[in-house]
Length: 214
Image 1 (cartoon, helix red, strand yellow):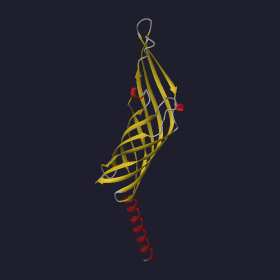
Image 2 (image 1 turned 180 degrees about the vertical axis):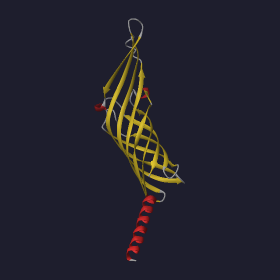
Image 3 (image 1 turned 90 degrees about the horizontal axis):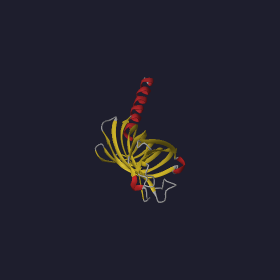
Image 4 (image 1 turned 135 degrees about the vertical axis):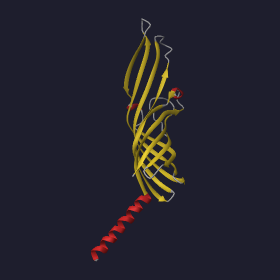
């Protein structure tokens, strides 16, 4: 009898604890698409085009209140930008195209609020660490025969950019079912990321993700 009673009590405690964890703590992983570029007041900013890339990582959400939660994430994020310009000083060069790829490990910390049903609004801060940055530059020129030549060079640009990025971010998250959610978010850095160019240059990223919730 004592053994049976102990087993029943243990089962009840496990059930209650499991229910509490499901009620107040949520975690999972997600991945999706980034649309990134550079903004700011530098002379070259207007020439930058958006680059499409990817993001993937995990997150955890602790519900302080039924409609209010604190969320932390660890995300691998590929960012960057592209640009295209003509060289007027050299009539043999037709065009130069440049694609800069930047790889970040990001740690966002956000406050989440449940607006209606399964729709949450999110806002917070982010610290990003630049793992690597490289520029792929393609120079298209016209040779003596009048034909178009193309030469591509890859340049390591990691030292050009700040290793730490501080940013503000906000977005929406919608839980499709018990195990799936979708997310849209905008993030902009608040510190100048480019050490070489005059003026301030800021990362801008729109991210769209699909996640699996445990």
